[in-house]
Length: 180
Image (cartoon, rainbow, N blue to C red):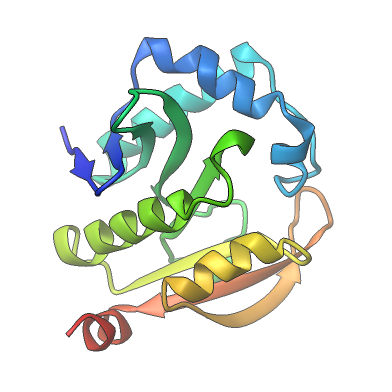
């Protein structure tokens, strides 16, 4: 079982007790504004999502981590790696993504968590390329992508909701050069 630690966070696999706090994140329309068509999710949808995220670990050797605040043990949301099957035009690819509850925004936690996930992808899983995908207008996510060293490589349309998205990319050689 992979666990990553940062100065303020523990990135770990999912537990049953994570469902309710993650469902609360998914029930917030402000958090979900930039996710697909902006619809909120209920507890059962969250439970199914967590099961799918966990199965990614088994099939891919990477996945989405539960993000826990070290000082309090509170679940903040998720970060991690997944295959962006919803956008076939960028495949083969691995995407770094994140979703935190609103009370955890503006503290650099998403950047801290995503940095650990990117490091894990390149250094522990030997990935050659990591992408990140954000809807056009989601400036906060694009700022995080830029902090990760990613650069925009294309703009396209999310096929399930029709919204425009930007794809950012970081290649392993760029990562190595930036971390030396």
